[in-house]
Length: 312
Image (tube, rainbow, N blue to C red):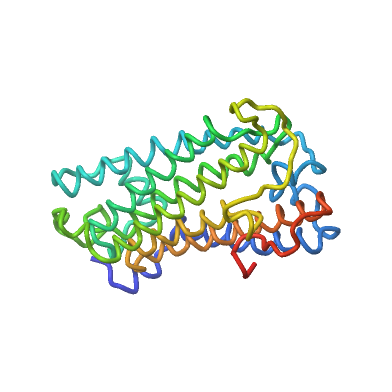
């Protein structure tokens, strides 16, 4: 059995991936925001999409509405991972070989479990709800501009992100191959009602309501009272948290991933890497959108922040 020092020093593609994308998003995103003349146009296109990419067209772009592909993929993936967790913790059946291989390849063959079975199961269930709700919004609620684009690299990175999120939830769980557990723990249903689970779930639901309300407001800007799309033009969103920030849906996304850190009792180092990337990415993209609004609309509310109410 490997020692603790071996476990801690084992290379991990998951750690390398989220560390690299977080640092890259922070560095090049800020350079693009505040020192754009020195940033190559090709690199700027990785950070600009939708309305902020209108002046940065590229042949290596795909329609922004293809966001829904992320959520189709994630909904199916997380449902399978959730069933795999129940298979392991409820029925004490072995983990599917493909899942074990993914964990070995992306996280390492020696892992130290720190999160309870109940925390991991609840977190995976909440992520299933999150991506299914986003799939509904993308297919039934949101109104994407006809010429809205995103970089092809951004599109493919989206799939790697959601795969990484799923693996991050399992990376610190008990009972998987590569952990020192001789037998997987039996799921204790009463343990679902721990305080951190309740607080995290409430935060998650509040953030989901904020995000859904924000996306509804944005969609309704392009619809008439009968729900028919009448324009693809951009206008100033108003109401709810839009009175405080330009991008409350990005703020809600940050809270969603923080709420799962609460559910995991702040014990998962791999989840903190996910949270760091989500926070960095949402802040950078939120600033792009905020400055776009300020430039596009002379009467834009000057007291609004970009993403975090009263702060940023």
